Amino acid sequence: MKKFGVAVFQVLAALSLVALVLYLIQIGIDARWVLIGSFTAFFFGYVCYHTQDFWHNPKYWAVLSGGFGLHVIGVILIERNWPTFPLVHYGAIGTAEALGLFAIIVIGLEH
Image (cartoon, rainbow, N blue to C red; front, side, top):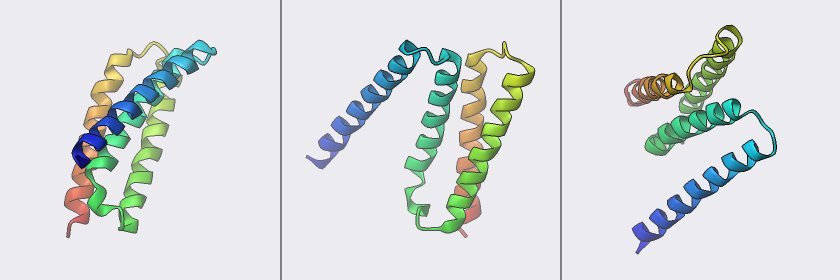
């Protein structure tokens, strides 16, 4: 029964996030930034969810924060220098970032 409750919660959370994205676009926030923020939340959330065993380790939070900082700097530089950068490429970049961050956390902090 616990797994069912978790699944229902995850579906409700996902639907809430979709509703938030649609609302932000509706009130006039640039859809490009909303989608980039959504990609960021998804990929970093995915890494956080699958690395729960490391949450007690302060180094984990330092690595995660550093990765997030580098991600934000990268997005700002890309958007400033290539404002027509295709959003689909952010999906590929985000996947690579998530895999790299996951590897750094699991391999680097496991010892």
